Image (cartoon, rainbow, N blue to C red; front, side):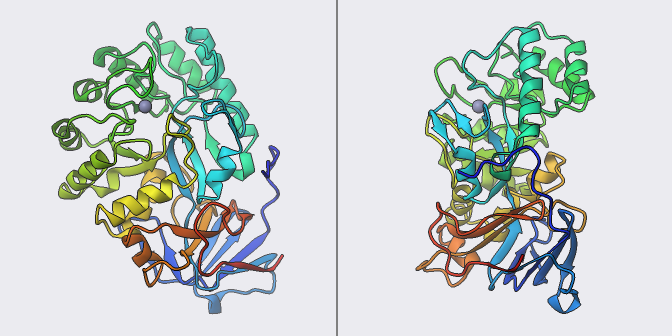
Length: 399
Ligand SMILES: [Zn+2]
């Protein structure tokens, strides 16, 4: 495991990635860009275009992509981190580093609920949320950006609590429904307070995940009006199809599909959202670590499921895990455009895939091979130790 200390290594003044065979933008309106070269300066995308238009003389680091595809680093919209790269849920070390090898460069906490003995009293849960925000802000496991500090709301919280959390830097709520607030009316009041102070909310959907969790159905979800309908495909127990359809049709909120959910319900959600012409609402997560474990390739597996079985174009499926999430969650990554964070995953079709190239291999349900990840303009990993081996892999030719 390569744990990195708080201060990420300084981004190279200028990083050039050339010979990109396919540039996936993350933007569902234009998922493929006509370009073969990206330049990042100081960790931000500076230029997207043709190699002939780039001055290589002053480049600190040059990567030859050797024809690989480049996409924005994948975003896992739903994780449950606890401390650094340790999870007590499955008593595992290095799980975030493993996910980096699955192309994930950003994670969003849906609550640090696996902390043994986590406080449920109001002063305790506020202190714990602020601590979680601080510790993951101060330490990026293997460079992965973990947005944490997501308190689970409990009965008795008042508006002042949300104001105080926001002032202390908390920007997320943990899954509504995992605490003592399980009724729509109370949830709605607290979600609105959170929103008023700039805190984004996610609600648990479906049956209980583990003993102690509970059922949250469509009536509670519509009443609560959280920003993201968390794991609308269940975590793992899904709502009936008719309720999922109703949720898609009755509000414009985010539709989160997770790996630790019901695959059939995920495909149902995809069909309904597609029928509504609202694929920009779909975002992807793993819900790891969970009862079904840590899923280092979970986001790639969701992309392969939705493309290979769900029939959505693979270049669109990548947007579910990049630009859609970035826009919905106001992140500065997830899209290939100047000014955004230079967070990338470079991939090629897996060796011996029946597909002729990356996209056709994903359309056949195969996983891509990850060849490199870049975060804030810094190369963070080379050939993945977890994906099937990529046919071609990028190479650092300077720096
Ligand atoms: Zn949940």
